[in-house]
Image (cartoon, rainbow, N blue to C red; front, side, top):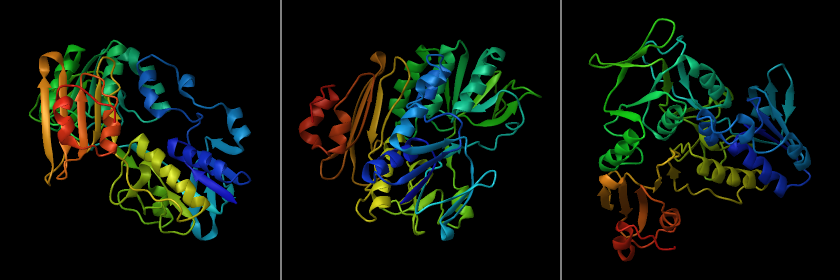
Length: 399
């Protein structure tokens, strides 16, 4: 059996490793566009902050792949796939045959249509190792940085740039930070903590223009205000990479559409990770990529034998000095959900718990302290009423 994996990130490599365990005699090839061996993408922030070097976040040596019997071809770009022929064409003209194909090309940063954003030195996005190298090389030309986007990555990047000695302003178009994870009250507590760390936060503002001629000179906001800076880092979300799937006439919406078995609808072709859309949802987080990859691998080996039921999202803010855990449904939009909160801005504490109509915990936010059991409690749908008083007081029982 010949398995071909397009994408050498967490999703693709998880599939390859699982397939090797399931099918010791199979031929497994991973095609990775980036030249660097598989690395921990979330750890790029620590490289940006100057805490680690790129080689230190590489997970496996080249010898490891040889010992596993996995052909890991880095620096290899796929031009097109031909599912009807079981064939993939690479840049340079080489063609590879496969029996089963896994698409895990990941995503690219979404670049909003802001005037002046293209063709100007000092404008960056952060997604790959090469992005970090470009940003670090530019640091000597900047004293002030503007981060456009107050999501998780934007805040982590802001902290990293402060660690490099830059004055940083974060701009968020929504009325508060982390709008996907926090409500206004929790965001206000977080913003206060970040300001104490030297990160200026501006929420409810929209960028109209990146200023400067050949190099960045600042950001112009709607209304005329100017935020000065010699560097702009765009952190406005991701865009799934679907070009190969579109060209091959696979079913594509926002992402590559897959069913509960990670099948694309085209025989022999599966997808998972940041490029995959399951039941209308693109998770864009590592736990989902890993869980989808496990299901995809099992079904590539024996179709129909594993089913994906969704991922309970759990995210942590990787900012030194800030403890923030958001797990599950933290922002219920209507429906039979109830919420309870405890806020202590002076101490930098915020706790929020969400439960459904059956009284089961479905979401939690804990800011300002560690709460290791909360992820398991939410995933297990623990009964909220017996726990609520203790949880609001900061007492976290073992699930």
